[in-house]
Structures are given as C-alpha cells and as structure tokens.
Length: 495
Image 1: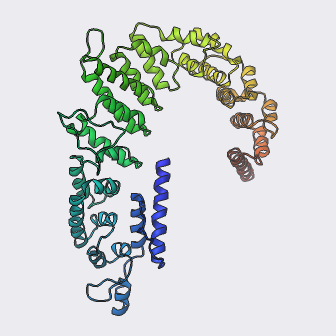
Image 2: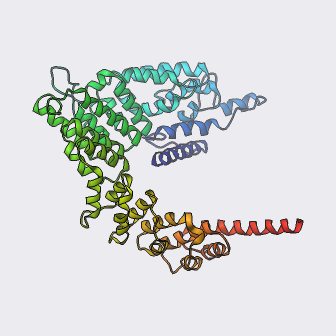
Image 3: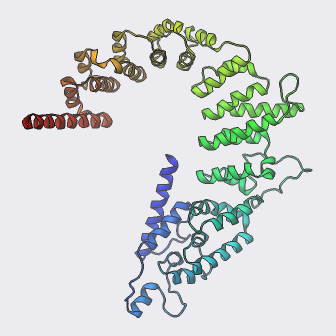
C-alpha cells in the first residue's frame, strides 16, 4: 500500500509540474522534476500530450505559433521538456536535437509511436549509456522498467539488461574483486550498479534487480551465503524477501553435510553459514524466519526449534513443530507445558497449542479464559473455537465487557453462530456511548446477526457514535431497515 501511495504522489507531482509549465511558469533552476521518480516523468509526459492534436484547418500563422515553430526547423524559446512531450511528432523530433535534453524524456521518446521520433531517441540513449553506464543505469532503470510494457518499450529494457548483466562498478568504488583478490564486498556496501538497484526505494526495481542477479550465474556466484541471508533479512517486501530466502536455502543445501549433520568446510565456512541462519531468524517477515527455522536442521541446530514454537507467525510455528518432530521431540507436549506455565504462557503458545491441539486440551484452554493477559484470553477463545469446543454462553458474553479489545472480538466471533439465543436486552445495553468502543462494536455485530427490533434500535442508537467506522456501519444498517420496512409495506398493499 505504501508503494502504491508513493507512485500516486509521484504522478500528481508530475502532472502539477506539467501544468505549471503550460501556464508559462519558468522551470526551476535545477530543472523540471529534479530527482523525481519514474511515475512523475510519465505523468508529466501524459499531461502535456493530453492537450490533444491541433486542428487541421488552422491558419498557417496560428499553426506555426501553436506548434512552437518560428521558422523552418527552428524551435522557440520554450522549455525543452514541453517540446519533447508536444502532441506534434515533428516538434518532439526536433526537440531531441537540442543540447542536453532530459534523459528521462529521451527514454520515454524511445517508446514513442512515431518511428521518426523513436529512432533518434534510441541513438541518443545508446550514446548516453556508453558514455556513463553506471550513472545512466542507476538513474533510468526504474523508468525503463515502467515503459517496458508499452508496444515499443522492450528495446530500452533489452539495452539496459545487457548492460546490467556486466554489473559495472559505481563511480569511486573499488575495483571488482576477482578470483585472486578475495571475496566480494559486503552486500550492505553497494559498489556496483546492481547492488545499488537491489537497495532501491522503488519496489519494481528491487524485484527486477533481484531476479536479474539470481538468474545470471556470474552475478549470483559473487554473493556468499551470508550476503544472500543479509539481503533476505533486510528486504521488507514479502515476495522479494521470499526469493532471497529461497536462494539462501539453496546455497546452504549446496554444501555437503558432514557426519554430524553440519555443512562441510572449514571453521570459517561453518561460522558464515551459522551467521546466515541467524540473519534469517532475525527477519521481521514470517516467510524469511520460516526459512531460517527450516535451515536449522542442515546447520546441525535442530534443538533450537523448541525456541520457535511460540513464534508470532503460524507459518514459523508450523516449521518449528516439524523441526522438533524431526529431532524426536513432541511439539504438543511442549505446547501444553508452555500454556500451563503462568510465567511463560504467551498468546502465541496458546495459538500453537490449538493448531496441533486435541480434545484433551479443552479444559486447559478454558482455564486460560481467566488469564491476567488479555492477549492470552483472546487466544484461548480462538483456540476453543478452532477445536470446536462447547463454551458456556454466559462466560463468552461476559468477555464482551473484557478490557481487551482482542478478547471481546474473539468472544463475538464465537457467539455469532448462536446469536439468535443470546440475551437481547444484555446486548442492547452494551450499545450505548457509556460502553467502551470494542464492547459497542462486538454487541452491535451480534445484534445484527440476531436481527429484529433490537438490531434496528442498536443501529439507530449508534448512528451518532463518535467512531467513524462504527457510525457508518450503524447508519448503513438503519437505511437497510428503513428500505426493508417500506418494501414490505408496498408488498402488503399490493397484496
């Protein structure tokens, strides 16, 4: 969602800059859209070209003035950015001959529908790339990726991809290490173009750089298993992080395990692989942590699986249960001990117990409904529901008044299938502004599932609630009841 919002902001920035130039505002001293993202340049181009074609019947003088031509092949004193995006192809073609046209707009013109514009733009981009490969690739790759989906956009992507596969060094970076000069620089210190693109703030660029790196053996082989794990742990995009995690697991699996189950190699290599596993385990993303738990077995650290049984992610807990079982342990018994320990009980341990629970665990989960922690109480209610256990409705109704919003929410979910038999007056008394928000919300949902006059009264009572989401839901329900009543009366009259 943040990525989508950022692209929308860039597009608005580009459109605003184009409108300012069209109104006659002088361009900024540093140039139009300086350091702007690719979506800003695309929106800039579309905004200027959206003014449409010129009328065919225009007088020659008027046409020359609008086109921006003061003489044969001569351009006026207008910003070159406007001329490069002009609706008339002859103006765009002539603008490519101006000194130092903005490279971003040159890239866009490489995908122009008119061949007379497209071909000179491509020659200009090829020369720019040859003169300054690193700077050009870093600055323009995100825009090239955006334009690759256009009919004429594949050419620039092929040009850039061929250059990226050589992975030129960044200006001022040390020479790339060879087979006799030691290992590659750490992944968190970019010294090449692809290393910089792998850390780009633009998500499509990061994904493309990742795919290109891993699909090109010479580029992939420069990264050690520690580098791969570091990239996986630093990535915040789940899809891209999963790609790095899979690559890390592949690199770990490529090593031959010794007789103790640990990867072969020297002490330094074993330490590097242990560090890679620790990096995976420290990631905030569940898919990467799950890969780290899976890698513990090959690293000869199966006993550590117990410490991940109460992870906050169901995926990681499932991998930990598998690991513990592979080591001959009993994950279910471990969960029971964690849940029964007042000092060590956590909501994630309770959730894990329910995930592999049995009927015999129902009394233990019921006892946790009075646990001091609201998160544990909520996990116990969810666990009982998962196991299909019968719970006293009175106890669940009491949880609607629980100070923990999570516990009240889980209680409402468990009570929803039996909403018809609940005490209507009790629920209606919880739909007043004197009650906490989470209590009002839970009681309102149960009354809507119950239906009837009380549900309509609750909707009318909460139509003036201070909380926007609850207020909107209550007003929508009130309108529904009003329409249903009118429709029913019409049917009765017709009958």
